[in-house]
Image 1 (spheres, rainbow, N blue to C red):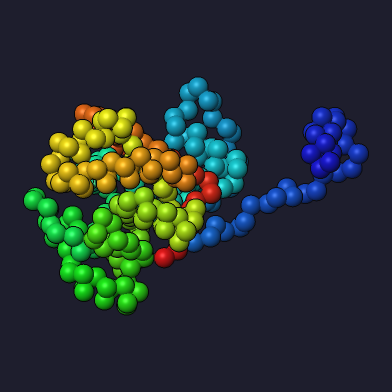
Image 2: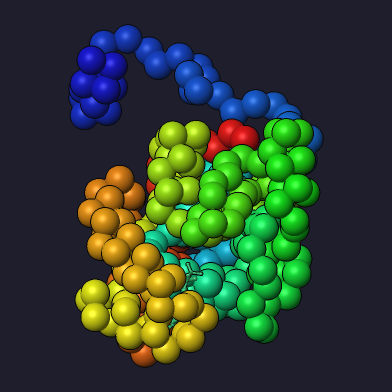
Length: 280
Ligand SMILES: Nc1ncnc2c1ncn2[C@@H]1O[C@H](COP(=O)(O)OP(=O)(O)OP(=O)(O)O)[C@@H](O)[C@H]1O
């Protein structure tokens, strides 16, 4: 309505009544402290009427200055995108699919990412480092952490306890870091109940069952009995993929592609208009 009225005024040669002496939206007499024009020009100068420079001939700073002057406001260089919330990434998948391998590489290529070191009562494997791969604790120590409510979730996995210390999550999210939780499918199920949609759940799969078994066999860390349990468990686990947000294929020899895809998921999550709001 107002626009139509204004347009009518603009086009009519003879005005039905005299225009008000000042524009309706008058610029403030003084700019708030800290509000500077893009150009170094002072406010007093801009209040003088400058003819708008030629778009073809004027320099970029001149055009910016003229636009600011016409709009009677300065252009802000502050980021338009709101600061994204830190993410909780839950990376899960059947045993031997490559969770550790993907996370290890992800940590090398991405900044501001904290891998939450899981506490476990299982024995250390060759090459593993205490405090880096896992916190290796005794069963008694683990149960004491449970009693003190220090774990976000915990479970008995293949005869050993595994649990996620809450303190690390709070500490690193407080610093603005995304945190990565590495859990088996059982753990992911529990975390979904605890976190709901506030976490990003990624299911890692091999390209085929055969590829998964080959990878497990080549790792040479399981006995024949353990291999049989892990393979039959994996058959059941892949049926639970629909409870996750994303599925990522970690194909043989293509670790880098899987890591890139996880990186893209993180980027997409950060670009979401409605951000997840994890509360721990
Ligand atoms: N894309 C890939 N191509 C070839 N080998 C891979 C790939 N990803 C992982 N591997 C290898 O497969 C084996 C299993 O990987 P990894 O230990 O990371 O699996 P995991 O899911 O963490 O297993 P678990 O849950 O049993 O600890 C390792 O020897 C790893 O180096």
